[in-house]
Length: 66
Image (cartoon, rainbow, N blue to C red):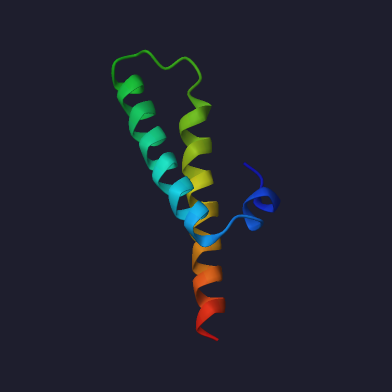
């Protein structure tokens, strides 16, 4: 996911996206534990996506306070 794509989302959409990404990370971790995960880079990528979403959530919440 690109940061530019995420900037256009609303606060609610970002929160939903964050929840979906956490679910995806959980599923990927389960697959990795059972040796079913063939594309191991997806786990790292999902974690980075969560960080991007969290950063934008903080920025948008901070903008709302000012």
